Length: 207
Image (cartoon, rainbow, N blue to C red; front, side, top):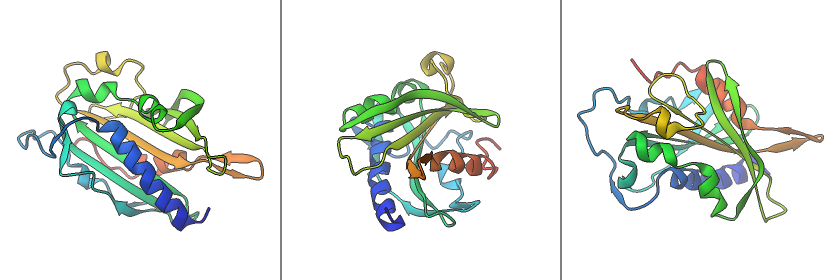
């Protein structure tokens, strides 16, 4: 699969990722502009390490009212050294709705099935849930999905986010996906390297 095909496929994946985070009836992108603690997600760098933003996708002008989303980001990035493409979605809003939507539910309803159940992967001072999906299309490579939550510092693969983050003013959720490559019988997940580079980019969730 060349990088152009890879990009197009991951753009579709990105739409699935964001729809998995943002579901239901939609409302304005910014529900409130008076939350001074909210870091605009547009400040996430478009380049870091070998990764360069390829698409900055619009979902609609309205975001899921149920999630009480205050901001969102929906992009694909390409590794200029390897050609690998990763889709990235981040949403910020009320802890209750954001904490309960997980990709296991979303992808299972979109002709995906879990090949590997989720496991917590530590990266630096953060941790992320990782799981692998496959489709009924035998010609389509498996896809890994990573996700975690944050209150504005480290990302955490919480087992009970609704209770752990109860009462926080703003909860962030990150979710990304990438095609798992098989080279010489060994699989390589581009999302892991993406996250390592992303965490090293020093993009702050807080000032």
